[in-house]
Every structure is written in C-alpha cells, then in structure tokens.
Length: 159
Image (tube, rainbow, N blue to C red):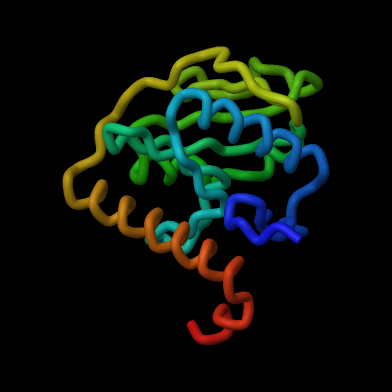
C-alpha cells in the first residue's frame, strides 16, 4: 500500500455534471501546463463561488467560469462579479457549445477531459493590492484546508 501524499486524490464534487467535470479536468491540465496552480469552487468575499481559480507564478489570478451548455450560460448572471476578484476572466466549455454566445471581453477556453486549448486570451484588468492579498490568502487557506482534509478527513468537522 502506497501512502505518499501525491497519490491521494480529492473526493469527487457531486454538484457538477459529468460534462462540467470533464471541462474542469481539461482546464486544470491547461493551467498546470502554463505554470498555474488551481483551486476549484473557491468561495469569494461576496459568498459566490468561482468554478476555477488559477494562481500563476507571478501572483496573477485567473478565474475560469465553466459552462457545460447554452442553458447553463443563459441562466447564470453572476459571472460579471467575478471580474472584481481576478486579473483575467475566462469561460470554458466543450465543443458542442457555440463559442459565439460568450462575451468577447472575456477569454475563451475549449476543453474536454483530456486537455484544453486557449482560444481567446482574456483582457487583463489588474487587481488592487488589497484585493490581490485577500484572494491570495483565500486561495492558500482553501488549498491548505483541502490538503489537510485529505490527510485527516475527520478534521473537517472542526472548522
């Protein structure tokens, strides 16, 4: 039995559709290939949750909003608020969703379970220092709590 921490996988998030999970996996591979670490379902100061937050080596923060269908995009109107919490905002979807439904002032990623391609770069809108610091702390604490939860699942009830 191997007990190396690198072999422990986080539990599957049951709130997502299989298609959204596949997109998330591909986005994760793209971000990792570009030198980003990522946290999924990161709670923001507004109480909303960002689908994916990527943290680059220079401290840049990207939010990737996953949309698995046209309807998913049409019913969700909270994504404009995410701009206040990132340097770049992206949408990610799969090939069956038409790219032209997504706003041109956000980046666009086409993904599946095996990878993703950055189809349109997002415009940069740098965060203020205070917001960046708050987001970095939120990111670090979420990642550390999740890692600790894998090591000691019973500790999750202590928060």
